[in-house]
Length: 216
Image (cartoon, rainbow, N blue to C red; front, top):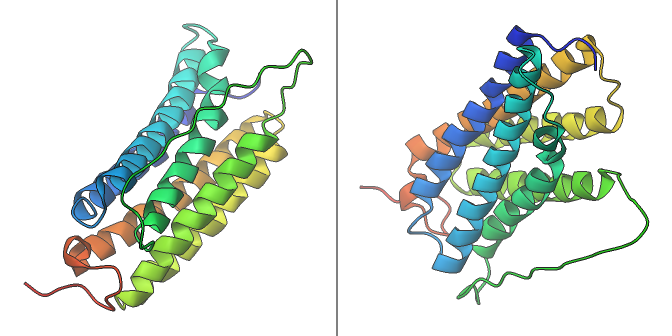
């Protein structure tokens, strides 16, 4: 392990806070726009993503302070965030389905003798979830005629892809840690800014199928 410092660990909490703020805004604004099943997916996915980020940032601060090295906190990042982003995407996409009346969750337990340690399956889940979520919010932004918000969701998605690439090529150096954190801050910052734009434009009153937010 190289280059993890206390300032670096503290900075890692910034994108977590950005995501939390954006997720709260989305959950508040879309509460009456979603059926209960879809909203449950949104809330569950958001919480999973938030916990994954908190665990990773907490692992860094504990390591930087030389309290302990608790790798389970770091290792849980992708298993939580991958499915979490996918659930957020399914919830947002579900708003546009005519049969979205109840949510179904499926639990799959898979056990195998060979040891498989690759994070690629979770990176794929995270990428699909991020892409779907950002695309859906991008489409909503265009329907509400919020072009800046749409552009910001594109920026958030591009930098989220950058995080996926960095995760696949991570070499555990100090420079790589800082680069990953800066990319994540830009991504979550753009996500929060775009969500704030939709919130101010009346996302809570917007109806799927409408091209603008309701007035009043």
